[in-house]
Length: 240
Image 1 (cartoon, rainbow, N blue to C red):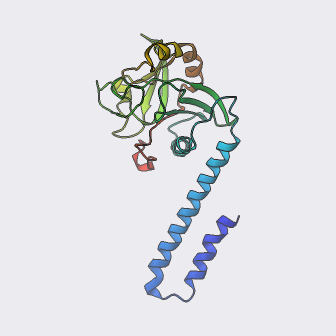
Image 2: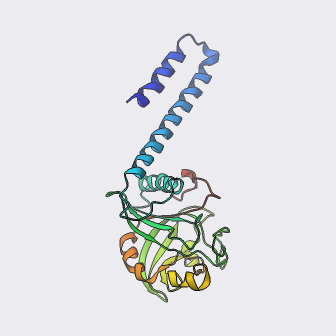
Image 3: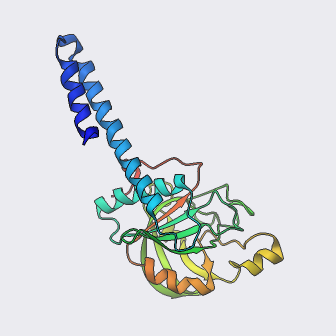
């Protein structure tokens, strides 16, 4: 309870003995103090969730990418843009030769899947570095998505995505950026080509995992594609 009481006490202490000239400064200090405490509380909560997570014998994501994903998840859940307590995190700062997609059950606080995932062919070779929201760019888009409906496409069972960041990924549905399976997303492809295969911008998955992952994350769960070139998105940038 100390973190809740301290800012109020600090403000009361500072308010005694001040004149009208210092009133605005006191108000600014109060606001800044509360903001810092709120941020510390959120960061502490996320750190606790991270360290208590059941890895299910998988490798945990990096704390930085997980923290940004969870902050966005909370905002989107509050806005009603996502409905499920399932978070899919893709970390495009990692080599495509490593498993860089996690599906996390936030109720059980458990990793359900840890998988290879492809990036767009114009986003980079082994390492993803260039991103786009433009049609026909063959590049991946970063940011937060809501998963949509399932359909049968040329790659079999597929899952539509709706980008939730203006100017960053909101053309995803128009671009047909979807989750689907692909035979070039496999350890055998890596062995033969020294890197994972690449898509036209879709976060493509191993064929053997696609149906199971889609079944869990379909219909309004949160997908976050992370890269350190972009910092945490503010609430104002999320599509409401």
